[in-house]
Image (cartoon, rainbow, N blue to C red):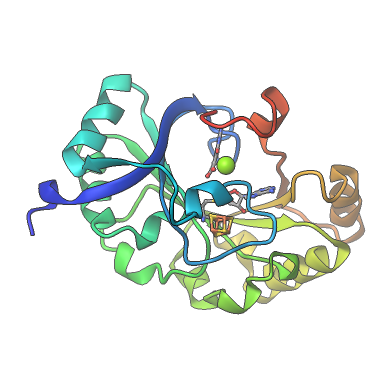
Length: 226
Ligand SMILES: C[S@@+](CC[C@H](N)C(=O)[O-])C[C@H]1O[C@@H](n2cnc3c(N)ncnc32)[C@H](O)[C@@H]1O
Ligand SMILES: Nc1nc2[nH]cc(C(=O)O)c2c(=O)[nH]1
Ligand code: SF4
Ligand SMILES: [Mg+2]
């Protein structure tokens, strides 16, 4: 199939500052795709995963045109889960050919290997490791860690003390700070950020970054399109 005829289900698209990941604070164009293969307890975009969620049908060319016309250099493909969208590799390739910096937000339950060829590899994978309180930890593909490099990032979204302990174990077991950037973020409103800082001090977590979702501080945390 010609990739131009591929239709994507896009729930929202907008320009904002990236509130998460290694380019936090920089402008990015966000494209949020419909549907997910997981169902995290704390998910702040459950609405985009509903079967009857509203979406706009967009071809690869239409998405690329929209992004290019913003003149913003960073693009974040998110969802839902971007890597389960049919044709996503063609879209990544096309965006890269337009000199855009492509970030993929992915949930850790999709095999990254097929996305790692030179042509289709995004500039940055921001990959979650889903901790116990998400209810989705059994779906984590730990082999994915071996495909990450220094331009990528692993994010632990922690909602409990048990989550923090598990993040610590995984960081050490897979030597993550020597592979890529590592972030710990609070499940918004579930754990005090100060507790994460204390945990980092107690365990001397060098080269790990605390990250607060910036957009939820700047805007109403429930706001869409920001
Ligand atoms: C909505 S997900 C979409 C991309 C992909 N499905 C994933 O989980 O990485 C984008 C990011 O938002 C994070 N997130 C979702 N709900 C959150 C919450 N209540 N508090 C903090 N982060 C949250 C996820 O953990 C993920 O890192
Ligand atoms: N401003 C802003 N930054 C983000 N970074 C990652 C997001 C996401 O939902 O994947 C996100 C988002 O929803 N808004
Ligand atoms: S994987 Fe991402 S989009 Fe899917 S339910 Fe979890 S946080 Fe939400
Ligand atoms: Mg978000």
